[in-house]
Image 1 (tube, rainbow, N blue to C red):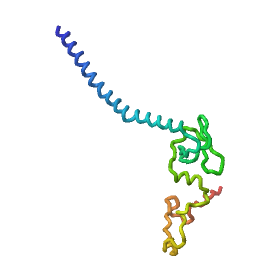
Image 2 (image 1 turned 45 degrees about the vertical axis):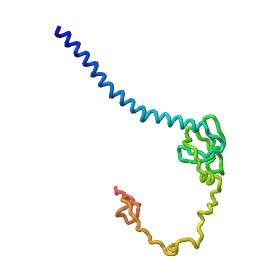
Image 3 (image 1 turned 180 degrees about the vertical axis):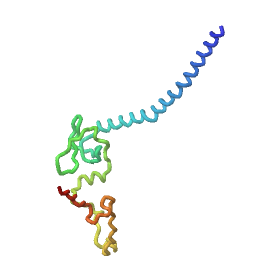
Image 4 (image 1 turned 180 degrees about the horizontal axis):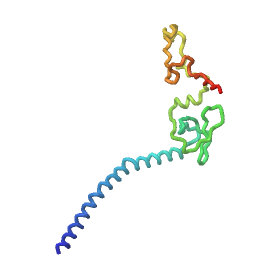
Length: 163
């Protein structure tokens, strides 16, 4: 009889303790879902919506950091003109990371490279007065690779052993 009552007490206590052990694990997974998994899924969905809504004439940025204008669309590729003088480059839609909406970028894309904007041109009379004086030359920093060698980075040829 004593053993039966002891067994009943241990099973009741273990059920409560297992629930207490399971509760922190469930809480950790709940926190991870709301802090990591859910925002990542939202970003992926937004990225896919942006990539599917690309139109001809949009200025896009690629994963490589290149910015260009879309000239042709295909199912999995977009043809992007980066330099306005050559052939468009085929880029996967998945390599497009964003749309560039700045009007300054669009003007820079349409302007020939040899022309500079008017605000960047500086008249000779507006140059600072210190331009006439020669600038002091900075001391040359020697790298650890050539420290102590008079000839720079060149090493002398090894001497051949006479036989």
